[in-house]
Amino acid sequence: MALLQPRCYLCDMPIDNPQPFLCLLCQQELPYLPLSYCLSCALPKAKHQPHQHQHCNECQQQPPPWQQLITCMSYTLECQYLIKQYKFAQQPQLHLLFSHLLSRRIANQVIQDNYPLPDALIAIPLHKKRQSKRGYNQAQLVVKDLTTQLHIPLIAEGTFIRTKNTKAQAQQTANQRKNNMRDVFQVTQTINAKHIAIIDDVVTTGETIQAACQTLLAAGIERIDIWCIARTLAD
Image (cartoon, rainbow, N blue to C red; front, side):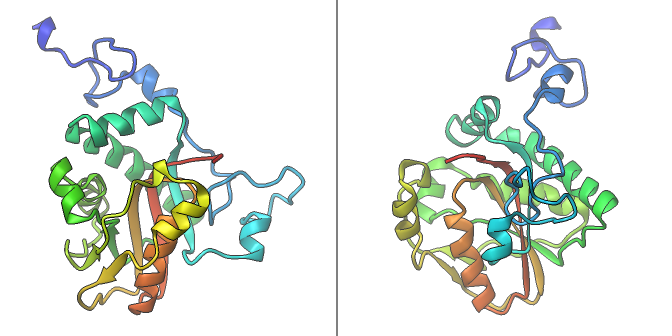
């Protein structure tokens, strides 16, 4: 029986808790973000900035096209390992871990900050060639869990598509990422929801979600929030 016991993805110790991916110690030591980060970009606010200001100076001066960005963790080595296993090592079952962490973070936002839940959820789409090669869209697996856990409707897959098979953003410089995301997304049918949340795995410079938001706002969405597993704190 011991051979069948699941082992922690990070420390390889046997797991006897209900979450079959991480031991309790590794769960506790994940690089969670505190709630004192900027509500718009989830980056740390300047130390001299008044505590009552909910948005960093940069987002106050130039607000992003979304209202709020909610994330579970900073994109440190431990988090990078888990997400790379999920995306590139054929470990799709890790969606259960990430959706659990993200739904818990959303619930805390609702309780502590009276965060208004969106009318519907949508995943950042992959191009059909990349999704066929990988076998799944990692964001879509997470968003399907979240619709059940948070009782929020899911916008049908195919309503919002990626029309260009762009190079992976992680391989690009900041300027290349911006050029890489021009005219990438398309809305194929009417979206009735007015407030939606876009689910992605990692937000780095924000160019992907910028492009996604611009397309969705042009289609009549009034408010967009971003929910992601991890946020890169420095590029």
